[in-house]
Structures are given as structure tokens and as C-alpha cells.
Length: 328
Ligand SMILES: CC(C)(COP(=O)(O)OP(=O)(O)OC[C@H]1O[C@@H](n2cnc3c(N)ncnc32)[C@H](O)[C@@H]1OP(=O)(O)O)[C@@H](O)C(=O)NCCC(=O)NCCS
Image 1 (cartoon, rainbow, N blue to C red):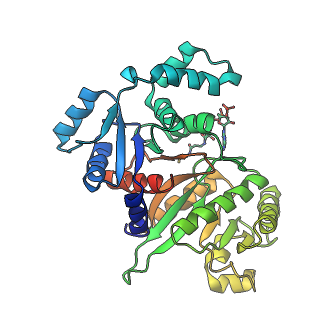
Image 2 (tube, rainbow, N blue to C red; image 1 turned 180 degrees about the vertical axis):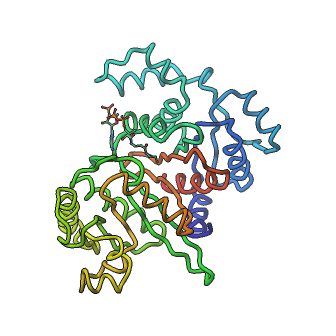
């Protein structure tokens, strides 16, 4: 797992960040938090009941001394948080009573800690679903200026015996269920930028079941048009599409199906046509291709907030915490 982490850790050592974990008493979070506290480049905030968290940590044998623990039930700035929440959700007619109830849940409470500047970043989803982790961020943090959507990518890393890791980016495998042409363009730009942070020199393939018109249909048109728009919007970025996956990654197939392309046969940044393809695709790489998957990393959001898989282990929490904080 050492790809790019050294650089991120160095960055965090110079500028330590505060990260809030919404599921503060989960043993996987406690294990990751104890490891982070020991290395002191990240300041964890654990949400939940103080006694419960301390008991859970003691029982599992994790030292969480130094972690800030905040219980939404007796947070000193809760009234201020309620007011800000009502202000942010004014257009939805949220009442203070509704706000108090919503903010008693740690996914909303934690997101508001980021909004209020108490934390630089948030990592949740050890028990919350993706939708329940992401929705508060969509509603309260919103997209960053110039972006229309929040999307996500996975970074896939396959260690090799030579020590040269193979690193790929795949998007959007987790957020936008059926992205439009314009959404795909934005997803491509954001994913390429994220890929660079992990040392990838992005070559972007817009994936389809068709290569340059070999198949027909609305789905193909969507991907082809998106690739054309993306080439216009990011002239400096190598982009090809629409491409089948084999034409994207296999040079021999690319020579037949898409000759002369800088990207075909060598793509390392993949834009899937929809969440079905993307979610299945990254899991195939992970489960059958021996890639480690880091993500989903949320893109286009106005703060660094990320979602864990509910099946995650402590090492994955630790890795995602470093990524999330480094992106803050
Ligand atoms: C992300 C997701 C949860 C949003 O769904 P939702 O909560 O039903 O969304 P809604 O349409 O009710 O919108 C809620 C808010 O988020 C905003 N929003 C929704 N999708 C957005 C996006 N992609 N980018 C930016 N904002 C978005 C809406 O504008 C709305 O804002 P508002 O309340 O201020 O008006 C939904 O797209 C989803 O379930 N995606 C798949 C998640 C998943 O299961 N992934 C697979 C596992 S990894």
C-alpha cells in the first residue's frame, strides 16, 4: 500500500489536518485512529458517546489517548450548529426542531463540523450506506465553484514484484447513477486531476460496448459525444472515446480497432458510461485482477469528505483517512 502514501504523509506532517470519523465507537475506526494518533500527522475526532467509545477502545485494546471525542448530545456549539443548518436548508423550510433531530445523527453532525471549520475532512461509511454518508455532504457542503456535480473515482493499485506499482483511476463507480454527457465530461476532468495526485499521467478512455462507431445506440452516442466535448474542454489531456475496454488497454487490439490513438491500448484513467458498469468494473479489477481499491474518493465537493465500504477493514480506514486528509 505504499504507493504515493509517503508523499501524502510528508505533506500532512508539515500541515497536520483534523479528520472527523462519524462512527467513533466502531472497532475498525478505533484501530485506525490509534495508529494515526501514534504517528501524529492527523488529528482524529471521534463522534459518539464518550463512555461508549472509551469502553470500546479499552475492550479492543486500542490506545486512543489524544483523540478528541465529541458527543452530538452535549456539543457546546450545538445551538450555533442548528442555526447554521437552518440557514443552509432555508429553501427547504427546515425548522429548528427538525434540524435538532437531523443533527443528532452523526453523519449530519460530522458534516456540519466540517462546514463550521472544526474539522478539515470527514470519513464515514463504516456502518452508514454510501447514500447516507454522501447526502449530507451534497446538501450542506455542496459542489466547489465551477463544478456542477459531485462524482467519485477509485484509485486501483497493483503492486508488482519489481516494485513498480500499476496505478489506474476509474469513475464514476459510486455516485452518479446515470450521468449525462456533460456529467461524463466533468467526471473525466476531475478524475484525471485526482489520478495525477497518485502519480498517474492520465490517458483517459471513455468506455462503451462500442469502439469508434462499431456499435449503434443512444448509449454509444452519449459516450461518443461526451468524449468529443471532453477533448474540446481539456485540450491538453489525452482523451479517446468511445472505446471498448480491450481497445482501451490492449495495444494489439487498439492497433486494429483504433489505430494511431495516443490513448487506445495505453489508457489508465477510465470513465464508465454509468454506475452499473463502473461499480461492476472496479470490483472485477479488485477481485479478479488483484488490484487494491482506494475509494470512492469524492470529486467536485467543496471539502474533503469520503465514504468507506461497510465491509472495510482497519487498514482501509487508515489508508482512506490519509487520502482524505491529504486532499483537504
Ligand atoms: C448520491 C445519492 C445518494 C444522492 O441521492 P439522493 O439523496 O436521493 O439525492 P436527491 O436527489 O434527494 O438530492 C439530495 C441533494 O443532493 C444534491 N445532489 C444529488 N446528487 C448530486 C450530485 N451528483 N452532485 C451534486 N449534488 C447532488 C441534490 O441537488 C439535492 O440537493 P438539495 O437537497 O440542496 O436540493 C444518489 O445519487 C445515490 O444513491 N447514488 C448511488 C449511491 C450508491 O449506492 N453507490 C454504490 C455503492 S458505492
